[in-house]
Image (cartoon, rainbow, N blue to C red; front, side):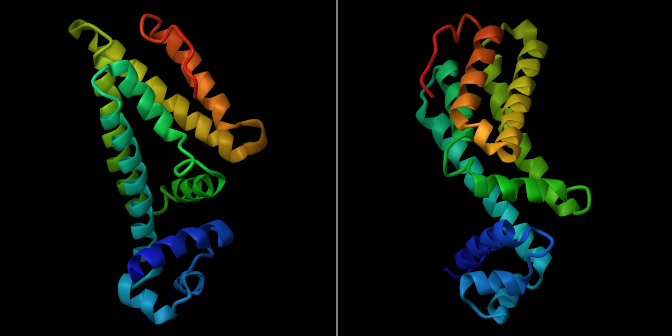
Length: 196
């Protein structure tokens, strides 16, 4: 329970203070606990922030995996479920986007952040590629890989727009834009508009 309190407080502190100014003291204050409790569980600011990033990714991955699992066997439904999960309000909101971009901005300076990001991105990228392979014959594996990469890049781009220009970039625009892209790149599967 204390760990959960501290991880949630770390995210609130990052939103309020930024990553650089988040400390064990600011997190303890957000959690309503003593700094000693934070030190007991995480030893250092870096230990706490690494745990907070892992927690963020675990929540993100659980969200898209659940969506894909519930979508059934049709690859079209599975792909769309994975994309919609990216814009789930619990995952993609102003606060969480500020946390994601704070961590991503520090990856070149904190190898542990980059390592965590790489592992979880490999999981999601692999899931997208696996789904996209179902849309192409076996001898067109390169085309499936390219489409998967484009989808991944497109949704990342929409996250960036939503973070930088929130008023001009609602999630409905992101979903409609992604749907339009899929209709062009996979017209046999995504002809009709789907409500987002």
